[in-house]
Structures are given as C-alpha cells and as structure tokens.
Amino acid sequence: MGSLTEENYIKSIYALSQATGEVYLSELAKKLDVKLPSVNSMMKRLATKKLVAYAPYKGIRLTEKGKKEALAIIRKHRLAELFLVKVMGLGWEEVHDIAEQLEHVNSSRFYERIDELLNSPKFDPHGEPIPDSNGKIHTQKRTSLIDLAEGLTATITAVAEDEKLFLDHLNTKGLQIGDAVTIKKRELFDGSITLQHKSKKEILLTHQVAERIWVEV
Amino acid sequence: MGSLTEENYIKSIYALSQATGEVYLSELAKKLDVKLPSVNSMMKRLATKKLVAYAPYKGIRLTEKGKKEALAIIRKHRLAELFLVKVMGLGWEEVHDIAEQLEHVNSSRFYERIDELLNSPKFDPHGEPIPDSNGKIHTQKRTSLIDLAEGLTATITAVAEDEKLFLDHLNTKGLQIGDAVTIKKRELFDGSITLQHKSKKEILLTHQVAERIWVEV
DNA sequence: ATAAAAAGTTAGATGAACCTAATATTTTAA
DNA sequence: TTAAAATATTAGGTTCATCTAACTTTTTAT
Image (cartoon, rainbow over all chains, first blue to last red; front, side):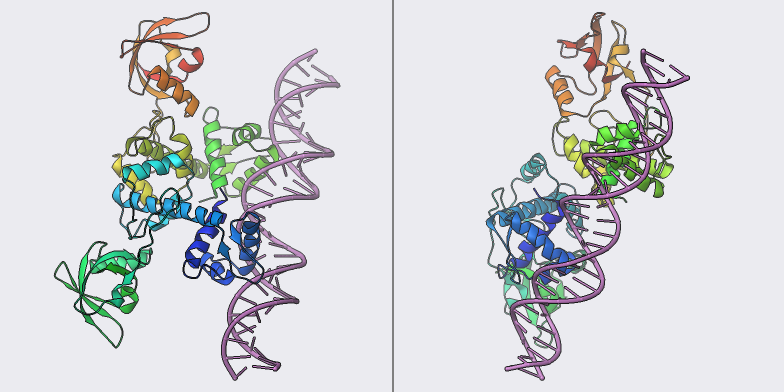
C-alpha cells in the first residue's frame, strides 16, 4: 500500500480517466488542487512503482496494478458510505467526507465486517456500484433523466454527484434512489423538466440537475 | 488540529506522563519508535504551539491545551473500540489497531453518532473510562488482582493492556470484564494466583497477568 | 568527587509532498 | 503556417518528519 497521498492520486486518475482511459496532468492538478509540477513528479514516482503508464508530454493511464488499487479504494469508500447510512443512520448528503477518510483505513477485518453486516451490498447510497473484493465492478448502462421522452415513467437508480450541495438539493426536492418518476414536461427553452413524483407532487428540475440523475425505464 | 504525527506524540505524552505528570524524551522516543533528535525537534514545535511545556534538559509535560487534545483523541479511540465491539461485533482483542486509525478521523458527526448509538458509554471494552466531550474523565481508584487476599471475591472491571497477545491470553483463560472471581490460592514462590471463576473452573494466572487485571471488591 | 553512563542537544542530511519561476513542447486557431 | 494558447517539464526552494554523527549536560555509581 502506498501513502495517503498516493492513494488519492490513484483514485482521482481512475475517476478522471473513466471516459477516455486517459487523464491530462492539468486535469489531475485541478482535481487534486495542486500545481502541475507536483503532479508531474508524482507521476514519475507512480510510474516507477508500475501503477501508472506515463510518457513525457503524454496523458496518464493506470496500469492493471493501478486499476486494482483504485478499485480497492473505491470499494472501501462505497462500503463506508453505505455503512454510515444504513448502520449509523447518517444522511446520504453527509457521508462523503467521512468516507473520504475511512477509505484509507488499513484493515481487512474492518471492511470484511462492514461487508458482512451489509450483506455484500452491490450499490452505495448514491446508486454507484460497489466493486467486489476482487475489484470486479458492474457498470450499468446509464440513462439520464434528460434523455427520457415526455410521458415516460422511470425509476431513479443513481445520482452522478456525491456532493453535499447537490444531495441537499435533491433532499429538498424530495427525491431518493428507488423513486418512480414520470416526465410531465420538457422545456425546450432551458432544458428544465417537470416530474410527476410518487408523492403526487410535481417537481421542477433544471437541466443541470436532471442530467445528473440516472434512471431505469 | 495538528497532523497525524503530532496527534500521536500528544497521545503518547499523555499516556506516559500519567504517573508523574512528566515524560523523559527517551521514553517517548522508545514508545514512538523514533530517535531522540526526532523527539527533541518535535517538542520544540509542540512547545511553540503551546501544547507542551518544555525546557532543555527537562522532562516534558502537557499544557492544559495539550491535555485537552490528548483527551479528545483518547475519547475517539475508546468510543471507536467500543463501537467496533458492540455494533460491529469484533472481538476486544482485535479492535485496538483499527481504533488507532479511527481515532484520527476528523468528523464530529461521526463521533456524535457513535456516542448516540452506544448511549454515551462510560467505559471501553477493556474497562478504560471514556472521557466525555469536554474531556472530563472518571479515574477510578484501582485494585489489582494481586492485591486481594485469599478467599475474597471481586468483579473484573478493567484490564491494563490493550494488546492482542494479552487479550488473546485472557480469552483462552475465559476471562471477561464483569466476571466475578474468587481468590483460591496465592503462591508465595512465584506470585501466581488460582481463581475460582463463575464457570466453576479453576483458573491459574501468573503474577505478570494478574497484576494487569483490575477488580472491584 | 570524579569518571562512566544516561539523557538531551545541535548540525547537517534525506525523502515526501508541495511550491514558484523559467523553459520546452504540443495543440489550436488566425 | 506560424503565433498564441494550452500543456508539460526542469530547476531549485520549503516544510514536515525522520535520520546519523558529534557534542553537551545531568545523573549515578564507584
């Protein structure tokens, strides 16, 4: 296991390279809130440790070893989040920062027990899949609320952001994972969407919010 | 809040200065497994932060501010231990190392919830008192098993070591906090003690073990 | 009481993780 | 197609937490 800092680099590289398999050093620098030279020298170190493939002036990609480490950290993060919600009774909007710390706890026993207590869960409180202990992860095909035609009904399966502000917003709108919603109206002008919710209330979401909500039709 | 390293220094100073109010640099160095110059320079730093009182060639003592910080860490450690045992179902012999990591988690919400779930507990799984959120701690007068006369019956209230090897040993002997024991025989030759246990079994403890078990008559 | 042992200090070095300033390479767009 | 913008690198410096080697102060024991 690497240092806390190394783990955070690995995790961010994994997250940012999801789409293309690669990250720019500058993206990483921004995400981690450090300057480019810091990223540059860390990449050299992670490259000698065979955790990333890195050639000067080229994008960064994780090696298999690097991916495995990333998934182990993500597993711990998501197990921790679910544990904090289900066992400790915290809200889904307040668990991210705590899980950021718990994900670095080095104890297989601790995470074994969490996994047992939660009965080997498949998804975290935000609907994100939890990698299994071998790093296998179910990546579902994802449909966003903004891709649904008017009149369609769908179930919320996940949300794209694990940030307090966003989740607080969903709380005030009364939306949760598992909720069924029907598209009442899509505004052409600003992309906002009106939903019919199980609570019978109509809910207005801006495009910015709706695109971050994943559903299953 | 200081760094992880600083927190570990503070905690060790507190533990080692319990008896006399002071620690030698060399004791600290031994406990933390670092060399004397490391301790020396850290003490200068903690002194400028007003966490320790320290004069060259003199012993170290915590300031009030330092004590408060130490007690906050100890509170987190002991709450974590009890949580790991009571809520997560781990054994008292395996929670120390995990609690060493959890005690550095920076989240009042997390510890608030643990405290609530455990109903503001007063003692950790080893019988050590848990400081309250203001750092107030109940230090009980302590009687060791080796101080009891033959024929007396007492209840185990705490054990002096939070180390796997010691606790494993107590587990094999079948001893737990809360157990009632009667002193059957004290051997003058080697200080060992034979107990009558609630399980009706006789248990032989060496002096080394018996002196680490606290009881209430 | 003084010499040896124990305890503590200072100086200078190292590696991790960061920084700024200067420079080089690659991409993009006039 | 070349100049500007974006991206990446190098050089050299900082702080934290550690080290070794050399030295000083205090304690202890003959």
